[in-house]
Length: 255
Length: 358
Image 1 (tube, rainbow over the protein chains, first blue to last red):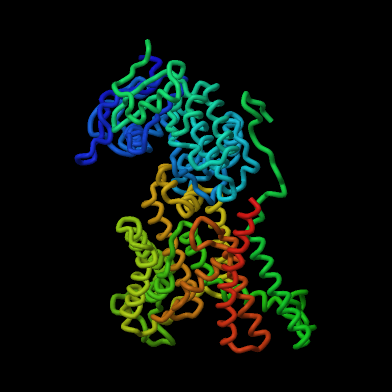
Image 2 (image 1 turned 60 degrees about the horizontal axis):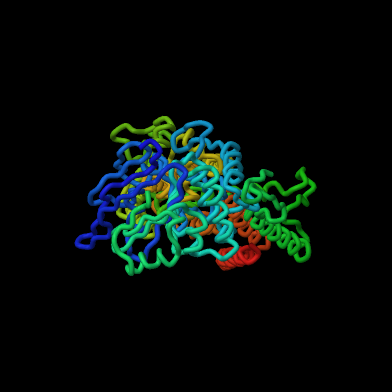
């Protein structure tokens, strides 16, 4: 149990009569990169929303970092160490890179309530360190996000997760809106995270990307986990069969 | 530059790509405007707009004119500081002019003297209660209380009922004006104590305006409050996701705007030695215009107090310039309108150019 970062048991979410997620059992170990695949509406994002407490689950249990957890909201989940890169980037366009990285958890020089003085030097230094650690290239830290390309924005969003000693990073289709070069840039960052031993859940539709970046692939179909496969024991064809329902039954890991 | 396993990390600085501060453009506009007035003055009137041409007064510049330029915009400028942080935070405040009216009436009624030329003060509202000749701190606190209350109502309405700021502050604008008229049943309130009258004497409004501007420029740049204003104005959802308490912050923003409007009311009524229910009409729009000319974006997230101060100086230069050219006040207003629209159009162009270059 000690090397398990995240574990869910019978995680279920119903919206009225709609069973968006049914009895999901999921495990993530230290340093592991797991991909979640599935058709639209298969329950991938629903699954993530329960873990990050953006929504409250109907039933089931979640263990994170060795303890059973019941987060009241996304802020609590983030404080516990779950960092999420959202599909619609949660960045403030008119702020520069350090301000975005530290948004909502600014480092203070003097605590004067709302009028606390910011430690701008420290935040800039920490930002530079985070960008080096994630190998993110940003031409100018003082530039506002508004003046950056889609890839650079995504990189800033990812670098934010790496700034704070996070224990789990979740990315919801981080390259869906990016061009070829920008996608490569983001994928490089994910590889760097892998090298640093940071566990990651990646939701993606991109088969090549998943096989490139992840150790294990979990397939969702109609709210259920239908496959849980090591990359070595499967191929694209196989995964597609599970996604479309041509193959059924829960395929377990070959032990 | 650190080398990691997957390429070079870190930063490459390009000094040429560094953002050109928006305030610089506004300042340039101010300089151009001054030069235009100077040239017209020299060519057509044989007089200088900016420089001292009289032999009986010392100094290089025409100091009297410089003082008037800034003095005549100081009071609206104080309001504009509050309005600027509201707009940066993604809101708008239409109530500040009416808050000035209401606060001036209420505060002045606590700042009156008991006797005028040996007779009981005919305008004193609380003569019977004996609330006359009170120390200056009383009307000052009353004023701040009024602004705080108005801002609290504005902010709470916007934060909790989620009605648009335009509507909430429009309601306050009408209500506060009503309060201003009801307070003394339309009668002007006059004869303040000497200590109250000292607040708006001479160049005091300028000193108060500039000190508040410096204070708030520092707050907007160096404190968490300022950072969160920009964050909420630029992407409210992102700010919420980041754990910023949006409702509390918005209430604080409107409270500060209300207090600054009430301070403007104190300075104005003190300077005029009287308070009238019609005080501050249209001030909210002048304040918004100063901010907009100064580069504050009405869609939130962009702008600065320095920009607004320069915007207010542009206002002052236009008024003084037209007086200097001996043109009627009608033309002033026409030109003011053109400049407000022109400033926004120019800013849009600049933004589009930068987006293309990026």
